[in-house]
Length: 299
Length: 179
Image (cartoon, rainbow over all chains, first blue to last red; front, side, top):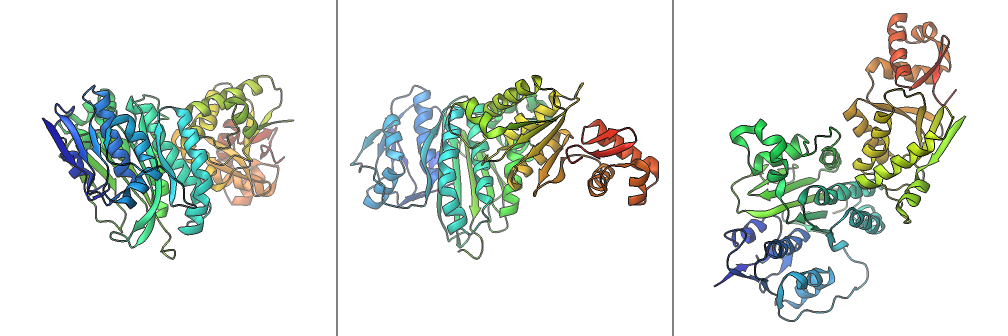
C-alpha cells in the first residue's frame, strides 16, 4: 500500500499542519507518495519541511518516498532555483520533469535551501546571508542598517540549535516575500527545520520532573522559548532564544516553533495566531520560523 | 601598558578562513583560548580587546569570548579587560550575556568614552559615570559631586574596583583605561 500525502496548494507554517496530518504515524509503515502536483506556492518553511519529512523517513530506514513535482512551470522553476529539487532528489524518488536551476538576476531569496550538518555550515550561512541582507532588509524593507546584523545573529542562533540539540542534520532557508493577507507588507523569513529528537526529548532528562503531569511538547517549547532553559546544565546556555526575542520585540517580528505535536509562537499585534497550538499531528524534529516585517513606510 | 588583541586577526587565525563574523560556540571558545594564551604571556595590566572589523557577533560567541573570559578570571583576576570597536548590536549581545551572569566590563565607545556593559548596581553605575566625568578623584570628592554620603560612594567604588571596572591607587579612583 502507498499512502498519498497531498501538499497543500499554499504550503506555509499554517498549512504545514495539514501536510503533517497526512503522515498518520511516525515512522510511516507504508510507502509514501508526496503529491505536490497541485502546489501553487511554498514558503521556505514549507520547502524545508518537505525535505525534513524525506530525511526522517530515510533515517528511519523506511522505503524511499516518491515525490511528484508541481504541475505549474513557474512553481517548478522557483523550487529548482532555491535548490529544493537538488536536495529532494537525494531523499525522494522524483516524478515529473524537473527544470534546471538557473539564476535570473537579483532575487528575494536571501539564502537557498541549505543543509546544516555542522557548525561550519552555520558560518557559511551567515557569511552568505550578510552580503544580501543589507541590500534587502535595509534597501527594500526599510529596516535600520544594524537590523541586518541582528537578523544574522538570529539566523546563527536558530541554525546552531540544530547542531547542538537535534542529534541529526537539518535545513535552513531565508527569503523575503509579500505577506499581504495577514499583514499587508513584505516580510523577511528565516525558516529552520530538523528531523531530530525534538524539544521534548531534548529537555526531558533535565526539565520534565519540574513540570510533572504537564510535561509534553507544549511544555518543552514553553521551557525553551519562554523560560530560556537548555538541556545543558551550564547556566550560560539558553540565551540564544532570549536574544532572538529581544530582536523580534524591537522589529515587531514573530517567532513560531513547532515540535512534535505542539507549536508555540510569540505573536505580534499584526498576527492573529494562537500562542500555543497543541494536539497537532505529530511531525519529527523541530521547525522554527522567524518573521520580520518591513518597516511600515516600506510596504 | 596595554596588551591590544585584535579579535578579527584571532578569528581568522583560529578558523584559518577569511571570516568576519564571530558566530557559533566552538568558534567563540577557540578565540577565547587564543586570548587566554596571549594574556598568559603578557605582563600588561590592561588587555584591550579590539572588535573592529567584526561584523556579526552572536550571543553564543559573546558568551564564549567575553563572559567566559571574565568568569575564568574571577578568582585571582588582576588584569583590566576593556573592549573597543563594538557596534550597537554587538554591545547589546555582550550586555545581555554579562547581565545574565551579573558581570560587567568597560567598553570604549564613540571615540574614547568609557561605557559599562553588563550588570552593576545602580549606585555603582552612577559612581562609574562620575569617575569618568570628573577624572581621578577620592571618594570624598566624588561623593560631594553626587551629593551622596561618603560611605555610600566608597561602597559603590569598592564594588567597581573589586570587579576591575575602576582602578584605585591610594585614595584615588580612576576609570581603568582612561587614566
